[in-house]
Every structure is written in C-alpha cells, then in structure tokens.
Amino acid sequence: MSDHRLPHEKGFHISWDQIHRDSRALAWRLDGQGPDDGAWRAVVAITRGGMAPAMIVSRELDIRTVDTISVKSYHAGGGKADQQSEAEVLKSPDTELMGDGEGILIIDDLVDSGKTLELVRQLYPKAHFATVYAKPKGRPQVDTFITEVSQDTWIFFPWDMALQYVEPYRGTD
Image (cartoon, rainbow, N blue to C red; front, top):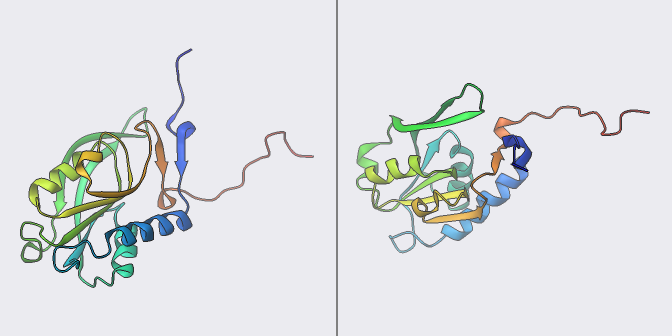
C-alpha cells in the first residue's frame, strides 16, 4: 500500500509556548559560543520565519543589534501547499554590520532543503547559522539546531495557524 498522506497528516504542530521554549533552548546552546570572548556582535533573522526565534534569542543573550535578511524560496503551489523554488535575497542586512559574517548569529525557524541557508552562507561565510528545527537535507547548512524532524514532516508554526472549533470524532450528543 502506498503512502498518500497529505502534508498535514504527518504534521508537527508547534504552539507559541513550544517555539518560545525551543528558541530559549537555542539561545542557551549559543550562549558563550561567539568568537569575541563568547559574545556575538548581532543577530540577523531570516524573514519571516526566523523573526520570532531571533527576537527570543536576542533577548535571552542580551544582543541589542538585530537586523533581517529577506530570502524568498517558496511560492504558492497549484495543487500542493507550497513549492520550493530558487532562493533569492529580497532585502539584505546592513553591509557595514555584516562584513563576512564574523560574530553574527543568523537565525531561522527551520532548515528544510538548505537552499535558503546555502545562499545566505555564500554571502556571509563566517556567520554562525542556527535554526530551531532541522530536516536531514538541510542539516549540513546549520551550525546549531535544537530539534530534528524527518524530511517528510510538515511543520505547522503558530503564526500559520488559527484556533477553531472541531467537531468530536463520534459526533455530538
């Protein structure tokens, strides 16, 4: 029998509380690991998914310099949820801040195929790349992560979800 599950059928649902806990765990793992006596110069979030984890990491590590890089690597698919495409930078962080990336933490929520991080790593080869979640294909692009999930798992982040009423499985009485 072939496996015809939809992405949501092998889903990993992340709550706001869970992303907060996992992002704090990422911060603790990164604490004291920077090149300047353990310190980091700045945090750069890969938008949009990396913004919440980057905010939490920067708060936990008391890093006040925070910037973003906007990379588009997904587009709306026809019959499928989202399709991966070639990654392109839509907005770059401050050039003087970045240099070659030395002392910079680049944060994203998830590494999937690794295309986004591969592109950003080419731009900032000495930066430290950290994600909260990692899939096997993208793991080589990440220096630090918290949780690995299988390549075929679809992660549902809280900013993509809405709470709604669900009928009980056996109906209502």
